[in-house]
Length: 397
Image (cartoon, rainbow, N blue to C red; front, top):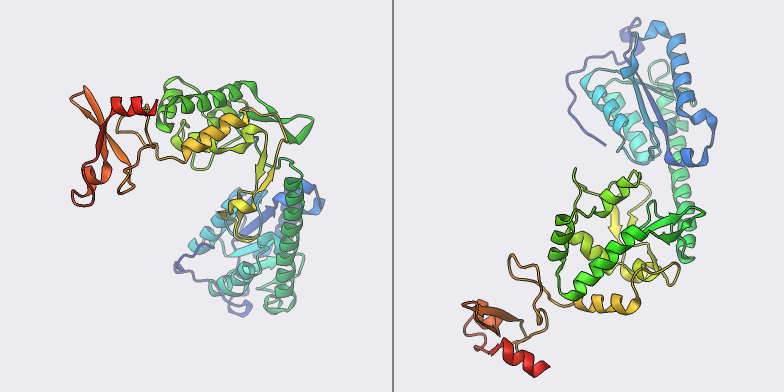
């Protein structure tokens, strides 16, 4: 929850101090994603919440200043388990600045479904700042009936609202895990190279245009281009990256940390090269949220992933995929400004110290490999082992 210093507010703290006091009202409305998906409880819709709050305002006009549209705060499709809601934060900012000094909601769950946040707001923050709080369903009014805030019903209701979210989250997670075990795709957007089956949103179909790009990425990597070289090639030739491609297909897709002009990156190339979805396997559950209250993603150990083989048509054959995985495990870095990997990149090790051999081009004519430890780290840690490129090639062949 946002925390800001009290900015010199000077409101009456009790009915007795100013009986004719008028309040600056802020109407808060929230509808969760779960409510939207289920289409449940018409009384919780944004329209009906707005109507109820406005009716209360109109029937108590003598208590409030005349409001405007800016005094209505609406978070549509936002969970109540955390405070990361745009209009909720705007409401708090207006509370701290003194723009409003009365907050009204349809019921306590609209304000928050996290009992610690709800308790801190109602019993701490609003009290310290002399904010009048009204919740219509529970009959809470901290001005007309101060005891209603301290009534045992308020914390019990907040705990029940919290438990509702916990149970809902648990049930949803169980359903998703069942679908993952069955090899059903549950993501919002299909992986690059595929589309969702129009007849079954849990199945994947090959997207021919994007699939050709995936094939070319694997082909370029096997032919010797490193990930940086592939990235430069795709960007230089105007090939839309996955984010740009999905947006061009009319999807409202935004990758995490995406820039205004999304482009290919080595991270994107690496993700594609390592993704088993391209051999026809469904791999899900790589990340999860920390809890139903803290919606931060964390990585899941690979042994806990949900992997089901042969659930959809492959774009890359398994032999090619396995070759690529073998190459990715090697240290195949390139020299600065180089796009192409050399024949022995990542393969050569010093027999004595075990470190990588460094490639050296002498005057652009002679090429040889030398112990990287001796060359770059210490002349005493190893000796000057070296071999000409031509001799190495003949010996290997």
